[in-house]
Length: 484
Picture 1: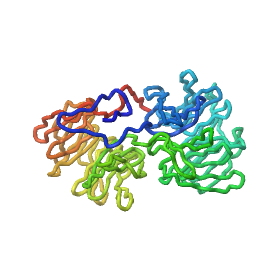
Picture 2: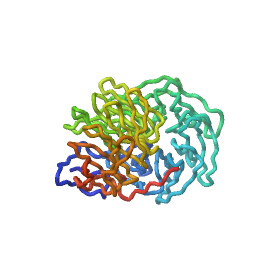
Picture 3: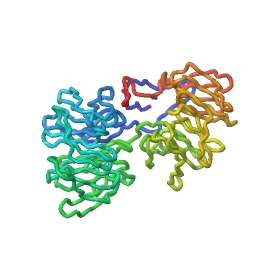
Picture 4: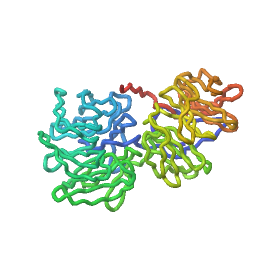
């Protein structure tokens, strides 16, 4: 069995079941901002992993240089100063850090909202905000003072200084590229109607290159003098950032599926393979096709080959249920959607829920664990929502052959059955029970705290261990600070 991407989990084992991997672990747990460092390696900010890695762009070898148990929580972009200091936009806790060449961290600012794009111009540091009405600012590292250069950004992201000395940056929501002088003055629109721009870069010849975050992986090149454009489709869905090596070859990252890919008009070359971020919820349909809720996407695959292909654009996809030719998805954005693999159409079912997680298919609709609201709900075919039970922190749900409803609650440490609005405890004293499914009249529960798979009898509540040392939950040693 292939090891996981993290040490410390041990080897999964079971006396009752055989186990095999359906996919290889991805070498990079997500890839967002990328830039070459003083040592000529490509440095990769990994938002979901909470870490930063360095990649040998020739061999693809990956080394974690800022581990996930450090002060940085959610690095989304990074840049190097002239003295070799690394500057990091820590997007979720809204912080900007400096990491000195000897590895010491200094918090520079907590006053920049949703900091994302970050770049250095000599000894000067510039940051933009990924929010409606965002700003481009100069951040003075020695004092923490902020000088506002531009406002009204429609969600900024990766930016860079152009040959004319201006800072170029995208407006992600409006499909535009803008520029502003580092010394102030009125911002100027450079290009509009650019396909879902997420990053603005310049190659070594001075050409303006704009990456798209869309499914096709479009790269748009713009002549800054004439405005003439050319585009290529790379097939790298969810691109996030780019860097050019010494030979002027473009390397791109993907927030959607991680990895690093070299792209040009002739095709692509894998530098670091792409893979899954999570996954979180996993389900298989009647034909055995596997679907994984992988945060930024819904990935689908094949039980025989183990491949996970055709990333489907989503948004914080977590819970997944498949059946009847459809796939149902919960999102941490608070919505429930139904996806038709045959037509690739997505139907929005419900919005504005509080952290919906587990989901199951009923005869009359969908059963959903609304974790943040402390309740289990039913969504009917007309998309009407009916609460059916209250629990402190429900995580997953399931139904048996008779249509009876079950749920896990990791706060209670219990598996419960829901009967006519009342909650009956089947098993308690468990350590963070989360995922649940039913097979041949037995409840199977993932106990994250002990990394075990348990079998629970629906009639007696008796439990037995089915598998141990499963690589579930946060990696060993990671302590995540509440970003609020």
